[in-house]
Length: 131
Image 1: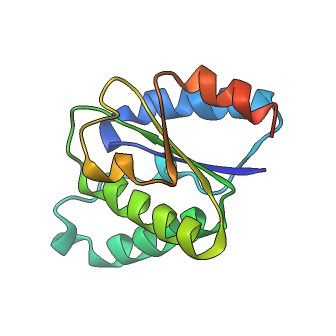
Image 2: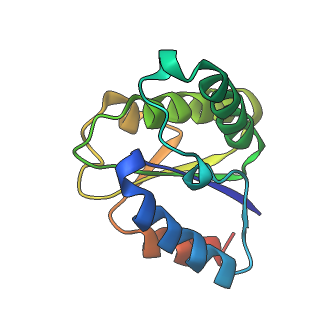
């Protein structure tokens, strides 16, 4: 099963811990944005911005499970990835989408019928064992 974890760039360490746990469960990561270097302001790093944006959208399209770590940070990237995941779910029936964390009610798109709101990543991981 391929899994994509979306989060604010500042949550990189948390995402790396999730990746480690997923690897322990023998799950595949569809795309690892934690390897990206910071490139803001984007207009000064246009080629990398182009490369990263293509890479991340392709990884979302390719995943079976999409996990968004909801937090108080309004990063634009994770919302675009969520939009791509929702569209893919509506059109193709995958990925299964989870929005995780205390802030999982902060966007109207978290209430889309294809999104499941969960409080803790461990709940998603337990559910993965049953998929």
